[in-house]
Image 1 (cartoon, helix red, strand yellow):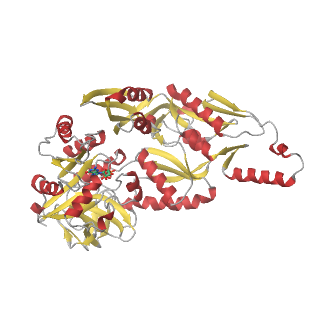
Image 2 (cartoon, rainbow, N blue to C red):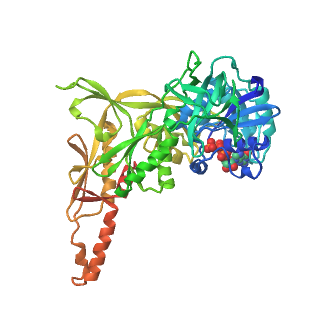
Image 3 (cartoon, rainbow, N blue to C red):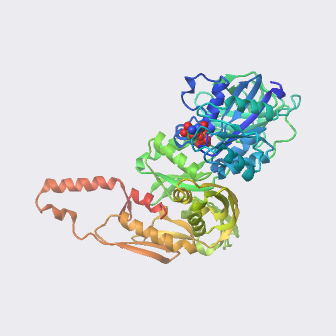
Length: 597
Ligand code: GTP
């Protein structure tokens, strides 16, 4: 396809503003699929994406409109996947900014718009859901101009649901978004935009060609990974799989090259011809690093192998999460897993439970701490990364602990501002900015990620009746007065419950934890102290009183069958318990205790 007939664009939108519905309409209008094939939203193709309404993996669809090839890239709509968003944006020359006519601009929209502007995109504002009775398109138009600073005088008004304004959107893409640039004669240079595992095609790689041409049979090289592969298929999604002879400059499509593992095809890598390589790789390749870690353990120890298999399968499709075996005295064998963020964690956890039918225990999520250790007789001073509070080294060796901080942008209607400020303050936040735009507050806070991974987002949503939106990026590690808090049940530390906390909030957290455990652990024949401790110092304590008499005493002495029944029942009950020293802790206790109060 000649360059001047190509347009590459993405859609930027806040969750629920109608991105997928609009994408479906664009596909339908350009004839990519028949009405019947459109029966379900096509771009969101994973069940969980559909249910939660969240786009996870970027996908691309090639559309034909008035003699042009339009490549529509779907981008993930959540902060955890910021790097994937950035790569998709880098593969485009423009974007549709979809804003709900009844909701207006939200924090997530802003973050993505700024990224898009950084990529020098031509941005076309699209005001969607104009069919809603609560729609205020003129107000939203003004908001786009005031808040984002974009000219919205020629915003396209749409109702993706009723099919209004769809052709206008397509025309605007051709008229306003610039054609890509590139040199067909130069050596191949292409960006690896995304990769995923497809049961029929194997590992599929989405590419954006910058210069040169990519063809079947070509020997290519991944410049960052340093590997070479032979291309066995070149094509595009319309959204059906269509095989193409080649992809030239400016084009977006997929290739397969008998790659076994998505981890070999990393987003952001530069693809070139191995025999005639390009002189310089594309800038900005970055390996994504997990930022939140937690342990995943099977409830039933016999499920360990099944868990291993399931995690390995999921990982085939998502190279951004990591796992390694872990054993815990309380929970047995499981895996320490790393995620891009909390949502990512929840998605993987939910897929394991739902698609692989596993019962899981998740330990407290932890961020990555940097520990500066002093030297010992045998070892020099060094800095280590700590992913698991259970691995905390000897306290006397720790000179300082640094924790990751984020800058968060929160957008919320005025009336919820009070409680939100308090929440941020309670979580050790530092207020950076507070401005008002059209009855809504825009707040900027610096916060320790540690304080956000527990339940910050849920709280924010519930205290604002769902109206607050939240976005963040990491701003580096800072030293903090951090300590490891251990939980002891009957004088024994329970590793799965230990966590790193700020000294200032340790007591509140410790108290909450022991109080909850007191209610969750059943009485035994002896009394059980439950303690929260820092180093050797107990900071909170509760005691579960001993059971007063033997349960079987209730059975009026003689009735043997009754007695046996009761014992059987106890045995069954026990299956769901974890024996810990001499104490049995029910599974729910772990989950409930970790839910922060
Ligand atoms: P993510 O995939 O999570 O980013 O969400 P999305 O932006 O793709 O939103 P989606 O297209 O799934 O739409 C969210 C909801 O808004 C759905 O219930 C749609 O039916 C509805 N919706 C989308 N467009 C319109 C519209 O023009 N009018 C009305 N009334 N509803 C719409």
